[in-house]
Image (cartoon, rainbow over all chains, first blue to last red; front, top):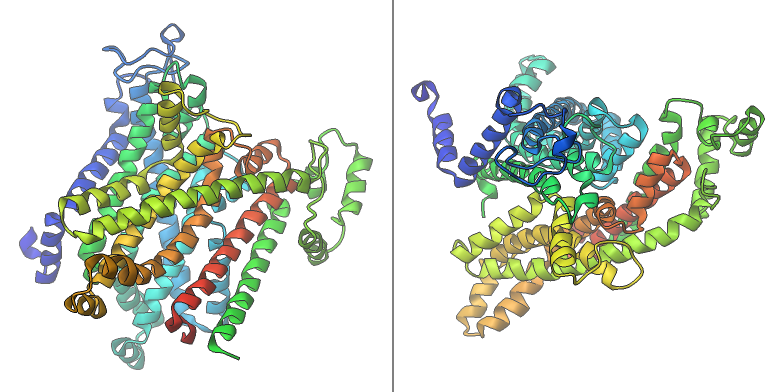
Length: 284
Length: 309
């Protein structure tokens, strides 16, 4: 199958497979995705039903990660938590990428006052540092799975507008784009055939890194109680009552934390690796 | 007028529309919420007459732009109205919490800069060796670390096991150590990355090689000539991180029950005490814009090339 690809793609692919960050990050991300997809089949217990007689048990053969205050199996909840994180992060980043490509690309391509307005709005959105924008949106729309997706998508949106706009501005001035316009190629076709493919590398890299940030932010919102609500298993939310069990049952917050940390690490490794391979000039 | 003065003025003017935009969004919050703003801003037990009184007193019956001007006029005087439930004015609650978060962030920044710069130099001096890889991995760990989880781990170690530091609360300097270390370690990861990259770049430059070729002592070249230039981009990163710390403090403050701005905002969101939410978010965003403006100006002072841009 590799033979059917053109030589430069094959070279990039080979470089990617040799890159250690991509390999380690890729394995972690794949494990995370599989865990999320297969949660119903691999989780030993129902993540929402507990046995109160087994409340707050430390790790044991029956419950490898122990149980929480309601006697629910923490291993099962960690596995199902992957599914929640997977849904929230991929859907929100996907929405932000698509919206960012459209708004950023159009803004750069059309230029003029529209571009000016878009740039200003993006600047304003970026003035809410990090989790603050998501927190602000969450304060308006309220908690819940869908609302967290909206909050995290909005928090990612300005980043992708900025990237798409930046790279579209560069490509727009290229001679072959001028030539395409001169021979009467439609705007939509120029957008799809030149602007988009040239912006793809930075967007792919950034989307991977933003998935890491989004998983952290969504978990943070849930940790604060403003995100995904019980009984849906979510890592941040599982840790939110940790303070109560700090001394008596640290396993309650240790395991979801490990899962969250490794998952975010995986996406960051993958993103860094993709950056090395796709944007070789950035390499130090 | 000098280039520098012109740049400073232009940079400050550039921040104004951004801040206006931020204030518009924060102002509109109360109108984006489902429901009648006057009802939202009234205590839950208010009668219809009282709600109408609030509507008139806050000017909520006036056109939107007029309401915004009233809101802005008050905000510029530092007045954000009264908390809906606590009986305090918003500023009475806001400023002490702001001061706490600021103290926390400054301390965290101190930790972050010292640890990060040292890590970055340490790695850059021996690129692509085991120690460089160790530092690079450590920074990546720091960037991937959920700050609230790190806080819980530090509490487990220093409060539960070693019984050295309090696990939460405020009042004494001891209470500041764990929260600022938590925030600072995450910051150190970013500072370390930035320092390493910039140090590597500077060390490969001609003047450094020339200085070395002249036989100047290595220490002098690295810690005086190279470091001075390598730290210039780190300043920009540090400015951004400081803003992230003020926002990220929300999570840290929750873990340590620290009475800062982040916790004030989150508690106000739960209580639907919207004047506090508005004021809190406006203050954090304004601080962030102000810091970034200040950093850009500082950058122009230390790096003359930027002024011409």
